[in-house]
Image (cartoon, rainbow, N blue to C red; front, side, top):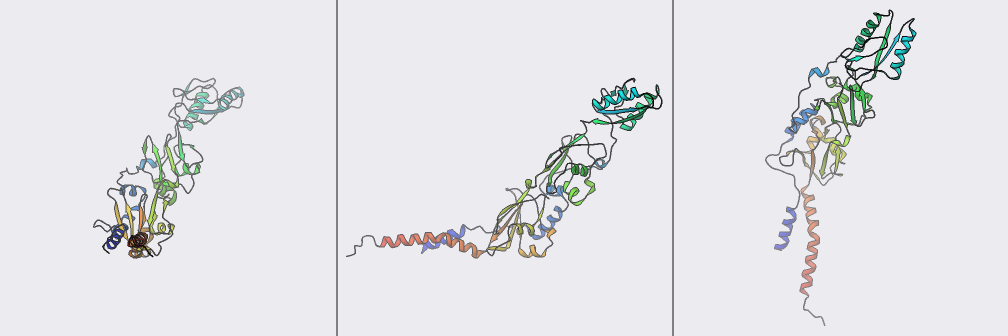
Length: 348
């Protein structure tokens, strides 16, 4: 009898009840943190202990698109009588182009012209003035043929990896030209300039239309568009389907996470729905119940990447499982004890 009691006690101790320590946070704390999550990507990163800079308003300002050393220009000339000059300039412009070297370009019948630092319009006017010192009524047409130094490179979920910039094109237009899919993980996507991450929230820009995030792109900028599975959370315990759920937006409502896990079966204890957040050493644990999930607004119960949702089992379920675990042992012991009683007895 004592052995049976000890066995039952051991089985009960092997159950996995919800954590009930004094440091557990309640629904109020979870709601407060959820409203911080609504502020966006960088508020979530702050909750994870990651600092960031504020978005500088200068990043939203357009700049003059000027010619740089190494640019290749397409130049054509029109003149009513000097067809030979127009043909010579146009032939080089179409077939080879005019490379800016040491800030200058070299045109037929003209001394080198300094164009570095000028806008295309200013360079056009300067070339016309230089020609008109010798020939009147010259009209010049100038455009870029190749601009290696001023382009944005995109990686990840994009169809077009390179987009040229002109001092006016903005981030949203670049994403549209690159054909970024709507299902991309904008929470994990980022923009890099001169080796530093820019504090731009791509989710707010693309999904919420926040034009305060629509910065002007510059040559050399790099954009990475992450896969939707780049961030996720887990739902464990007494749910119909324990699983990992992708978080392409960087957050999800608790109600949706439980729904995607198939809901809570009768074996689940709806009084103890716990959210485990943070690192393993010092996690933050929230305890909620089914009434919170049903009655509170969805936006006040938000999960973030890395969260673990755990639904405890009911005491009856735990006891039933304990009994099922020890029952084979009890049956085996009973057979052994019965067999030992018959040892040494010879039936006539």
